[in-house]
Image (cartoon, rainbow, N blue to C red; front, side, top):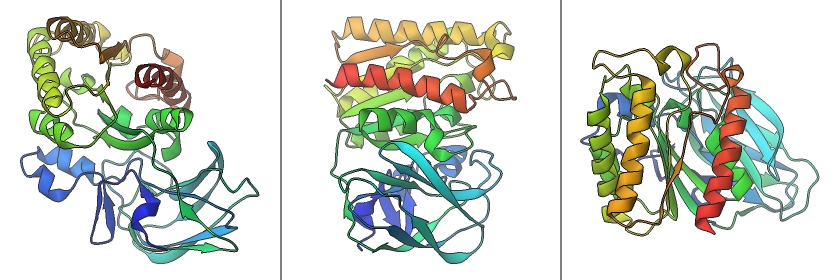
Length: 326
């Protein structure tokens, strides 16, 4: 089968490698963002039909340093929105992975997430014991954010909040989450402006507390510029901004620029409200992050959500996205 129509969540395929961002688009990007972009977050094989199994010819690379920490690499299977199994795969190998498909309606959606732990190159896809056809294209959702949007620290790439929300809404997700980055970089905003999208989400800010230490005034102005640049390419596209989720160690602790994460969150939310009012922009929406998850829904690092946290964010985001796209 032709590989291209079956690979979802990839902007293009370069040398058999499905990529979220074309190399030419990242010439002015920061090095850490480029490195994070190598992780195939949200990239998956999508199909319908009555095939009994799917074979994927794949070559896996070494462990990607910015992939979400996981015990192993695996292809994970979702059918009709429910997880139905996984097939492990080693790094540094060229192999054919066979994914058995359960009995189902021929119109049910089948999604097979690629192993994000590695940088897979896909050479061929075959349907066995029946037919397979590409899924019908739906609402295109482009999600920009940091490691939480990328999927840290889920045990399964299909458990990232973006993937959870995409299954709930039926949207076609392009995950532009970049671990260790997503600090409101304007070259990335320019890329978003040039990327086809029916709805956009922006979820950044926590890395502006420690990695690049900003104060409230700076991040407020940066969000204004970021939104303005995205709006140049998407003047009427619905945009959902998610402010940072809780990070207990940072909430009331001041960084080198004198700001707590609570200060930065308030500034980001204020910037969204101000931009919406000044530009009479009814398609700009905010989902406040402070109460989306509890401390029990954080990973042991106290920064990233665990599986339950991602599920909670995904459910809230799905409700908001469905409302603003309707």
